[in-house]
Length: 113
Length: 112
Image (cartoon, rainbow over all chains, first blue to last red; front, side, top):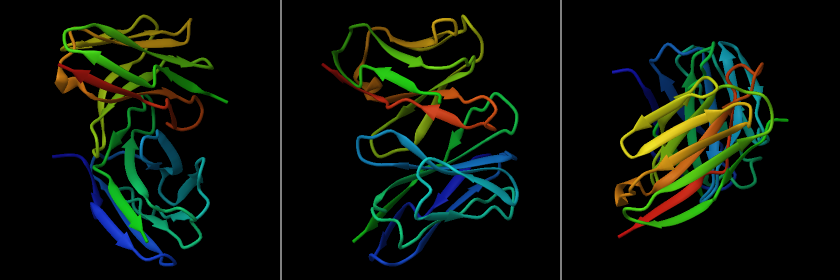
């Protein structure tokens, strides 16, 4: 079955620690995205990548970093510089050429105390 | 800058009633997507609308796209409790490699 997996589902960390969220897809999609969602809010784009070894900042990239070493994988690191990291993080992927329907992973809920 | 606005943001309706969610966007685009999100869950794709006048239906939901008016609607017919969720529309931001601009979401609650 093709799809997107994210791990872990729940993550608890102490303030000041960096944490890496995993995102893997086997849809053969070129583009991948990371979003943040806060309770009762919409989606905000953190980073996106259209091809391997290339990525662009989204609307709220500060305090986050990504890498794209393989087409299938797009991990997100939440650094200690991110002031309010507690949120629901969603990874998505799409084809490189339209239509750009994005397919979402199940999400990772990060709690930092 | 492309902006996408949904209204209403909150909708409480009775089972059996009809209602429409509106999605307005600010610049030219002919590709629009509707997603559903259940509480605590991820987003699930509902409809992909790819041209002016496109209409898609699935069960009690029907989505349409008017690119001239820059408007999409999601119409709910004879609502049932299972439709309670948050619905997002998203518009293709041309020349940005697949980046979608999402609306704020409409939280729908269907009560008996």
